[in-house]
Length: 109
Image (tube, rainbow, N blue to C red; front, side):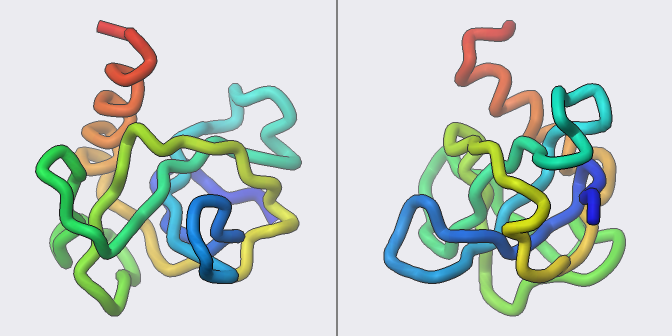
């Protein structure tokens, strides 16, 4: 299955001790090998001053069952085959905010 930009999924926890963690898909079909993998920003329950909080109104569909924050500086490539479940889809404006913040950490101004 291919996951679209803005979808919140649970994939392998590459950054912590858990088996899975939520991520937000930031790439689209222009990503090389988009049929196999996408770029994702990590979602966490740890509040940080520069993390982006996810509220109920940030979701067009679905949601997460815990207070959650996106770390736009924690971006990784995840293979679609390693995704466990789809949790929901963010509204476009929230997805754009996360993507702009992530690009800023890469030096894009």
